Length: 212
Image 1 (cartoon, rainbow, N blue to C red):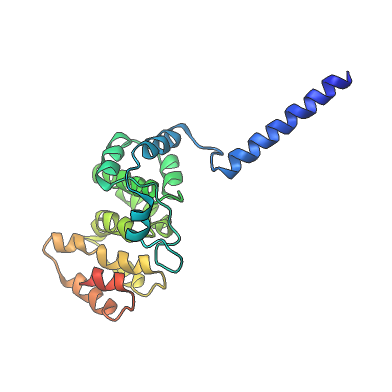
Image 2: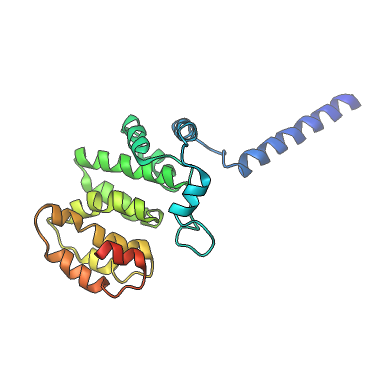
């Protein structure tokens, strides 16, 4: 009887240790689609760590120090996104909040594809706004802002863009100008010029590049 109790305690301890490992390694509640995506990304990681660090400015004190990268190229990410075009909103919500830049990029790429054929575009526009804090690097902004925010506001008042120009968050200010690329594409420059003037004296070099 004593031996049985000892074995049960040992098994319980092993389960606790396994649970701790799962939590610490970010595997808790990982849904099947998301685990598949993570595995595919890891299999397609081809960009060396040194190059990622240099290109994405992830050293301490640099603008990208908050971000983590797996090392997957943009063409590969776009190909993967096409395979998960029908990913549901719950999975998209988890993907866009990922600590890895590539997974957030995938979420946005999928969102854009869904937006282009969606009947309820307002829902996807609001989804983007609700997750705007996760659109937090220049590649994420440049790949998505004009396709979602710019497209949705094309025939509407653009007060929201002017509000973003006053944000203390760099990426939100960049979204304000990048969203107007949709206007430029449709041969309308007024909004772009107005927002560019507001951001002309922005101190961050990433804003200088975005404004031109």
